[in-house]
Image 1 (spheres, rainbow, N blue to C red):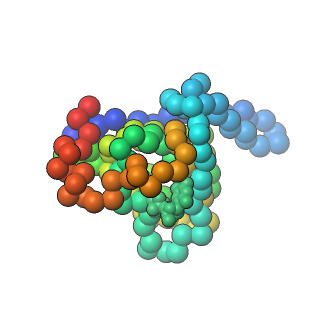
Image 2: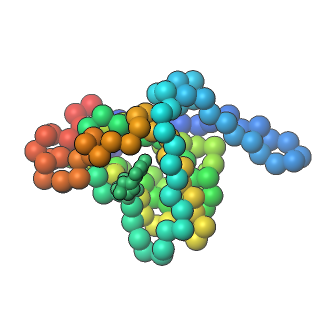
Length: 138
Ligand code: TYD
């Protein structure tokens, strides 16, 4: 089955010693854009899902800081489900990819790094309008 276009997994540096692990990221070095905003999703009740939209321009990276969840991305033609459960991995999701998050474990914390400040005008919340625009082509 074809994969949704454009999403890819990033592996971040992991500094391991007897005191535990440390992971860090720098915008444009480990993240493919200059980070303009960070937000996080937590305390998600069992069975709930988040997202369910695309963005016209915004690029994001999802990190499971704690626990696990699935990110489902869809370019309009193909859908890919990625299970996130490692805090040294990030999922890069470019613009024009429909996404939702589900299957949150208890105590899951999802960090999202974003390429632009919050702007409701950048959201594509209407699935039919997203498909009509052709989704993501490459
Ligand atoms: P939304 O993006 O719809 O949440 P999700 O995609 O995770 O399900 O945002 C939910 C609400 O939070 C909405 O009213 C907009 C607001 N919000 C901000 O004010 N700033 C932000 O950076 C984000 C991500 C959301």
